[in-house]
Amino acid sequence: MLCGQNVTMTLKEKLETDLSAAIKGRDEVRTRTLRMVLTAVKNEEVAGKQVRVLSDDDVVKVLTREAKKRREAATAFDDAGRTESAQAERDEGVVLEEYLPAQLGEAELTALVADAIAESGAAGPRANGAGR
Image 1 (cartoon, one colour):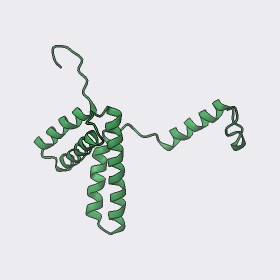
Image 2 (tube, rainbow, N blue to C red):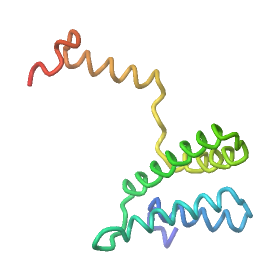
Image 3 (cartoon, rainbow, N blue to C red):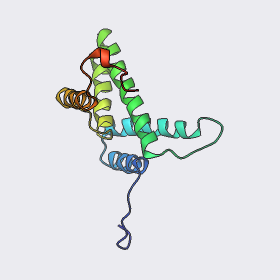
């Protein structure tokens, strides 16, 4: 902290700080994963006609997209019998998940849907769109 000020770090800054720590700690998986995602963030910042700084929400979208790529690649490697490559992709996915918001479990999602249905007063699929 700087002179007692409350300084909050952006998600991109946290990724950069964690990358430095991973390099110093010789954590190869974390280092390559954070380098990859920071490259994706920088590419997103310069995409389009004007350079922009990504918000934390935009960085989360990049992280989500990269995590999805890791899952898909792991599945493809598994299907091809390349278990080491599949595991490397899963390891990178684990690192990325640390920076993403927690996903709802099936029970939590079911409860939210049930609450929404009860709140809307829908009696079944035929009530879909009613009240508009």
